Each structure stands twice: as C-alpha cells, then as structure tokens.
Amino acid sequence: MTKIIKHIITVTKLARIIDTSDACRRRHSYKVERYSLLICRRLKLPEQEIKVIKIASMLHDIGKIGIDLTIIKKPAKLTIEEWEQVKRHPEIGANIVSQLGFFGEVSDVIRHHHSRFTGGGYPDASLSGNRIPIGSRIIAVTDAFDAMISDRPYRKAMSKEAAVKELARCSGTQFDPCIVDAFLSVNK
Ligand SMILES: [Fe+2]
Image (spheres, protein in one colour):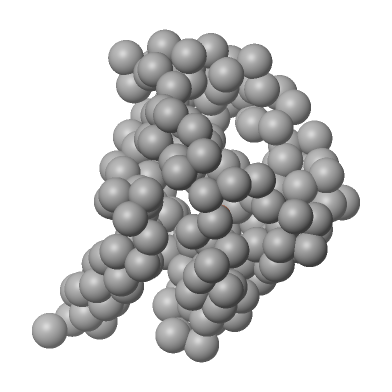
C-alpha cells in the first residue's frame, strides 16, 4: 500500500474519532473537507497543495482531544478560563499532526485555522492576510459555514441563506474575501 493511501485511511479514521467524540459535530470534519475541496478546485490550486488542505480539513480540530470534554460539550456560554482552554486546540492539533509524520504544511495549516484575515485571531494574533497559509484561510470559511448551519447545544442552526449573508458580512475582516467569493460561487 502506498504511503499516501495509508495516510488517507489514518486521517479518515481519526476524523471519525474526532466527530464521534462530540454528538453535535455530526460529520463536521468530513463536511469541512468537502467544502474545502470545492474551493481548492475553484481556485485551481496545485494537487500537492490540495492534498495538504484535504488532510488538514479533516484533522483541523484534532487538538480538541487535548481539551477537557466537559468544556467542549458544555451546553452554555464558556467562561473566560474555559475559552482560553479551547483556544489552545490549534496548537495542540498542530503538534499532534507533526508527530504523526504528515507533510509539514498540514501542521501549519491546522495551527492557523483560527487566524483572522485582518489579524487578531489565535494562536498568533499578529498573523494576517496572505501570511496566513491559504489552507488555513479556506478552513476558516468552511469551518464557520458548517458550524453556522448546524445545531449546537446552546443555539439552533442558521438557515443556509443567513450563513451565506454572515460570510459575506465578515468577508475582508474575519475571512479572506477571495476565499469567500470562491466558496459562494460554488456553494449555491
Ligand atoms: Fe477549530
């Protein structure tokens, strides 16, 4: 079996474990990967970059296995201390993935999937614009979209139309406008 097929099987199993650890995720990793691939194809990214983004999309929240599950599943607003714990998941995830021996870029993409386009995200608030890996900018959009259209213990799902409006509202601030445009053009 080739190394890449072994990697894909491992990633698929890991993504399933991440999603079943929290009932409200309901195949979230898989759906983020599907949406991210649509954007990659629309932007005509090179195949090697698409492989990296595919794996990173499926494993973007793997760091949550390092966070107390009672915080992850809490059906209410988090305290400041709990939120600080949750904010550690991109770094924990990047460290896990780098030890699994995937391409180094996967770890970088996971580390920055909560970066804001104009800066101020986490873990590195000073990172902004095109200095954020393109895979992270793509996952920021697809992760937010799927989260918005999914039920959470503390709120009901938004309609697809409302989620699209929210992406458009945050385009150029939280999200890279080129990525939002690409997503909205393929997700009608
Ligand atoms: Fe995340």
